[in-house]
Amino acid sequence: MATMESTPGPGMRLYVAVWLGLLLIVGAEVALTYARLPTGTLLAALLALALVEAGLGLMYFMHLRYEHRALFWSLIPALIFVFIMMNQFWTDAHRLRSLHQ
Amino acid sequence: MTESDMSVALGHGGIIEDSPFGIQSKKLVMWLFIVADAATFGALLFGYGYLRVGSPNWIRPFGFLPTILNGMVMTVVLLTSSLTMLAAVRAAQAGGGRRRECVRWLAVTAILGIVFAALHLREWFNLFAEGWSPSTNPMGGSVLFGGTFFGITGLHLLHVICGVVAILVVAIAFRRGRLDAGHVETTGLYWHFVDLVWMFVFPLVYLMNAR
Image (tube, rainbow over all chains, first blue to last red):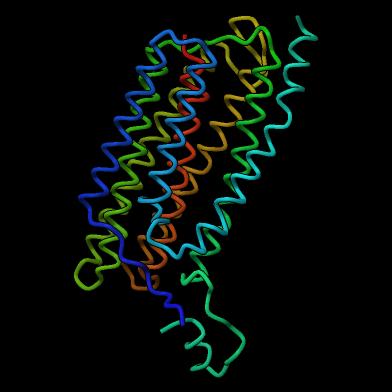
């Protein structure tokens, strides 16, 4: 029978390490912004860093790493699927742009 | 004692089954809310991307001073509030004499949330003073910037304000012994989610619009 008690998570040391890592990533994002990268490259880099931040937040701050795996597999793939499906309208955004040019 | 054990003890055997995820129902409900809310913010950010890609005259209005620096400070404040929330959850789970410590950490988290909201509102009023609004663009070019910027950051700000209210209510009730550590943990989940959303709003809405 599954227990409903809260799973003990990591100690504050690990939380502080993750917090410092997140701060470093934010600093890296700002540095990249002013590195004069092409817009597409900057967007890809910022999105990749934001996904790393989200992963750290989900796994450690939100404890998903320490919960039943069933919780992760029930929630996250469905959400990723939704986000993938939202990518369908980019072609229409490009069509809209070409209409205005 | 599990929820199904409790239901049996109360004479409601067979009505409530154990969660297949091994967590309290309030925590599961919060996770379901978070997934739904993540899809909402995702749709808003994708909508912003759609309008931006579809607008050839999109402008980048934000200078490093004051907007990007202000955004960095807001990000640090919000990230730090997540850390103080984690300290509150740990103190709540430890129980016993650490109840007061939990309430103190919750108070610090709420204060940081208020600081974030204050910085955000100050930035908004500065933009209003410059002539920005959801439907006007004083720099020329697409007026859609204001609509997307105030829409996305406004919804996030609403989440922060609701979170601060929830944290204060939970802190007071926890101090009086009306709520348990599970309630603090569930509130913490919401607060971390608000933080997590900002991890996408800051780079996509602020940094991608930096001059």
